[in-house]
Amino acid sequence: MNFGARFSEFGMTGAVFWIAQILLFTVGTGHIHGADILAWTEHYVGTDSTQSSVLQDATGSLLTVFGLIGIFVTGMILDMIGSIFFMQEMRIFGRHINNNQDWLDGLAGQCPASINQDYEDFKSEFSESLTSLKERFRHLFDPRVFYRRLALRFHFRHLQTYLLSYIHVYSDNGSSDQLMDHVHVWRTARAISMALFIIAIEAIYLIKDFSFDWLFCEGSDCTRPEWVSMILIHLALLGLAAMLTLKSYNRMCYSLFTLACATNNSKAP
Image (tube, helix red, strand yellow):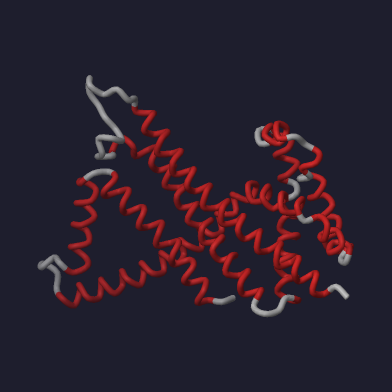
């Protein structure tokens, strides 16, 4: 495990989450919550003259250590629970599987005991030649398709891990490092998307405390109901979260399958 890279990755996502929380509970909910937080900070960190300088320095250092640990742990938790987006990622992965069958058939045949059955099941489920555009759209809301694809989650992880390992073992000229950069970007974007997803849920319950008039209004001259603001904020955050995750994962898949194909061709006699 590259601890330095993990610390940077988790630290970035954890910092984004807590910065968003601070903005939500200060700027978003008005001056009352912000004043409480500033008063608490002044009391413990260093601007309250009633505290001794030794206590202020010790408390400030302790809070800094706790803050760094909390940010790192938050980023790690966001990365772990970010896997809830795997159904959408699986759909993108299946599309790339379908577009690269010409050389994947031979690659899977080289390891029949390891991935061949997983590959065949996955290819059969996501084959675009078997469904029209209308049917693929209907599949998004069909519970039978959902549970059938949910059962393929281990196939998905197995195939993805195999391709990553294949490139790592057989590729040359820094291809593995190039792919790892895309993987780190995807994992970071997914964790940030998870943070936005949580913020979107919080915004639903905090909308009445928002101080921006254009987000919430009251009185006889109010022409926009409360639920409209709730839905707009919620959908905007969810849309941004989905875009970050799916775009970064799609980019990673392009690199994954392209490098795997190039590596496979370089091994051919």
